[in-house]
Picture 1: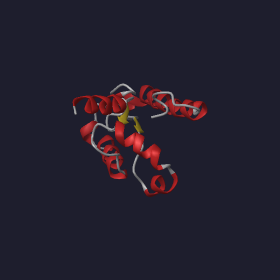
Picture 2: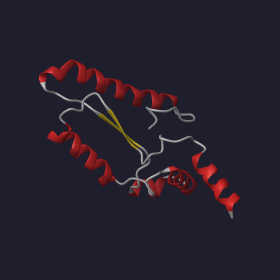
Picture 3: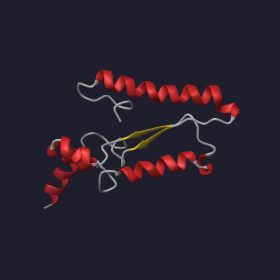
Picture 4: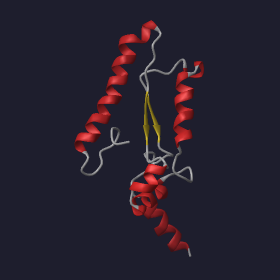
Length: 123
């Protein structure tokens, strides 16, 4: 997601990710009339063994609190999107960025904290 929205202290990484998004649009533009489609996927935090071993629990919790689908994504979730994009079912999609983020970029950054506030206010 760092190529879609800025994140603290990751300017170079985010810029490189944004370049991938733009490259997919250029490829789609240059080769679309030849029947070549190009799309990009921007996953948010995906629950993997590496994540469990290396990410601080607090960071994982923060991400879980902001997912609208109830849990972090899995590698299978991303694989299913890839399979869809590679299939004829997505024949009309090209030059697109698919935000595979469980809804984390569809709401304000205060979503999780406000939810806790309002739940506490009604009890």
